[in-house]
Length: 273
Image (tube, rainbow, N blue to C red; front, side, top):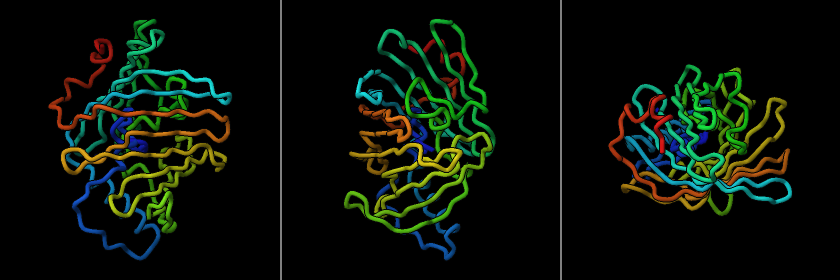
C-alpha cells in the first residue's frame, strides 16, 4: 500500500502521496539492522506501517502559488483518497476555484512496481487526458509539485540508504536517502527527515536529473485523527532553481469515509462537482 513520494506522501493532493510518510503513535521502536541500506528500508517501512488502515479519506485544501516576485494565485481544491491492498492507493483531486480551473479533476491509480496511471479532466475541452509515464516529471497544474509527486508513496518504488541522525527545528530525526527505480522519474534521489517519535516526514529534498538540489518540501502542524493517523496542516514546496513556491493548507480531514472503487474511475472525473 502507500502522500508526497509525497509522498511521498499518500493522502493526496492526492497528495495522497505525501501524507503516507506519516505515522501512528503507539507502536514500539524498530530494532534496526546494521547496513545503511537495510536500516534506511526499515525506517521507511515503519513509517508506512504506521499509516496503514485509514481506508478512505477526504480533505479540503487551499493551494497558494507564488512566483519569484511574490505574486500569488489561490486555488480551492478537494482531495479524496482510497487505500488499496496489494497495490498503490487511488486519489481524486477536484478544483473548485477560481473559475478558470473550476471542474478540473485529476485521477491517480498508484502502483507499487508498475508505472502509475493518471488522468486529467479539462472541462473547457470536455475531455479526459491521460498523463504519459514519460511526462510524470512535468508540473502539476502550474504548481511546484510534479505529476509524480501526486501519486501515493509506495515503499517498492525506491531503494534506500540511512544517512545519519539529525535535529531540525528541535525535532530529532532519521535522515534517509531514496533512489527512484522508475527510469522516467525527474529525480535522481530524495532525502527525507523522519521524526524519531512518530516516523512522520518533516522535510524532503528533491534532486534533479543532474543531481542538483531542485526543491524542498516542509511539513508542519501535524494533527492526529482517529487516535493514530497523523496529517499535516501545512505543506510548503520551494523550488530553489526558479524561486517559485507552492503552499498547501489542509483542513476538514475525514478518514474512513466509506468510499469505494466506484468513487475512483474515469467517469468520476467528468461528474466531479
